[in-house]
Image 1 (cartoon, rainbow, N blue to C red):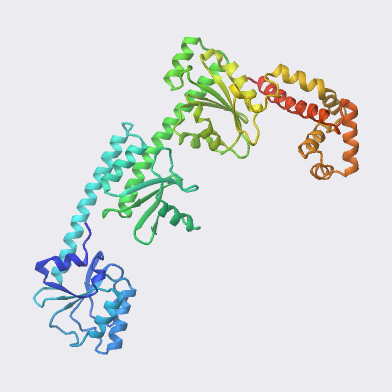
Image 2: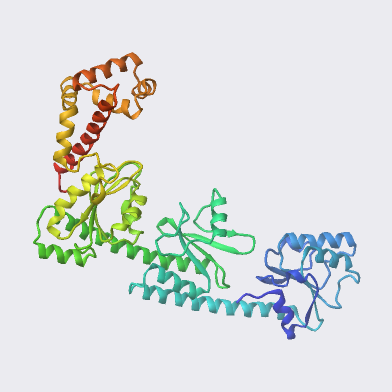
Length: 500
């Protein structure tokens, strides 16, 4: 428990009364020290109580004002004057200035030794230290219980109760909760942290105007920080203990997640290569939390927007999943298809979602479904479910065979011409259509002269036998390009059906 100016006043044995500065009576006392020098602020600091017989108090009114102003500026908790000792008879100027500054000035009875005040503060500090030691014991008892899978949120709540304070675990980059299910930072602390552009999370104090918070990054995990506020037991030592306990739990969870990922990766590989019987596949899927009756296969083609450490990012979603990566292709088996939106937010790339797995031996077919769904994705439609892949683009082919036949029929000769002559007419056609047949914009995108573009377009029309000046030709060529994308994407995956 903290010891304040008011506690001295309330202690009858100390026979101390408040002369002025009632606004500061709740200030916490760090220490009390006798000083009779002309400027005690050189020797005492924040939270200290100046005890004096009055020898150092000036007799001049202006000097008294300056004297107490220096004490207030040095953030002393207050000053205590021995009654009927050696202070000037007239200290009205000191009182007026102290009242103006809200600086507490106490008068202590002549019979009370200053050592009694110091002892009272020591006793209070000793009691606080005892409480802190007990709190540390409770913290590590909570850590021991946490090893029994209390969960990160449960552990954080228990630690909060151990130290009677509010604890928040957050991502230093986004200021969002570190893991789904954790309490978010209160808005006032989000504003304080976001306003401090150069804030370091090694260890710092923050103020929101009314209260104080301690912020610390967890050991070996700088992206994860702890904010602690409220409670009388909080200090840097207690915060270090809390951070250590949380770091142990996070490392345990990470180790557990890596083990699950490894087992899941091996199982996905076995499923796609048909190495298991249906019974064995079903048993292993259920053991890892992805029963085939409700699981879907999600396919992502990782790009530059995807996080480098996607495993860590996905582990924070608390979604039951099995994942395996090969090159830029990531295959994820999820128990809840509704989690696809959350997966997309983390990965930042388009996703294709298969139909229900139903049975383990259907995994290769589910992968083809996911690839086809992914081929129908666009920037405006980043998550595509195979079940309704054609709802918004019903004019596109629904399978690989149809896609190949459609694109070969319309622009197959153009693709052959590019392959034989090393030209880029397919690319020119794509850019020209994407720019809504604007000659100027297309030429700029292709970095060619307008006359060169005109020549290329006329050559495309000659080879394909379709005109880009009429709607029918434009539609046919555009659908053929999209069909080509689907056929190429799915075929590329089919040539290496096992992502391992």
